[in-house]
Image (cartoon, rainbow, N blue to C red):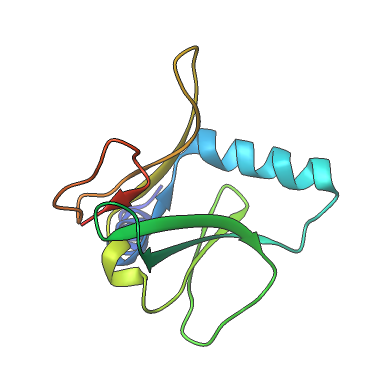
Amino acid sequence: MTVQDQTAADETTAQGVSLTDGAASKVKGLLEAEGRDDMSLRIAVQPGGCSGLRYQLFFDDRSLDGDVVATFNGVDVVTDRMSAPYLTGATIDFMDTIEKQGFTIDNPSASGSCACGDSFH
């Protein structure tokens, strides 16, 4: 990777959310199992949850005005323009251990969260 490529990657991450290799692999697998290659992983922030805001993570085939799109290992991650500021620098990972299975979001912009892990402030 050249310095210019690394700078572009850093800017993409700084402007929005990033997806780990493990999460990208899981997303690809889920989409392949459904026979879909026309969908993106959308992450949004909505009011609610016990801490004030909650994450929504779902597959979407829509393209909305102002969407922020980044591609990680062939997986498009889409964030709407209202959610993007809340997700700057956040990382989506996929955990598959005996203790926990599912997608996790590490968000440095969150000042606190609750025990459920789905909401933050």
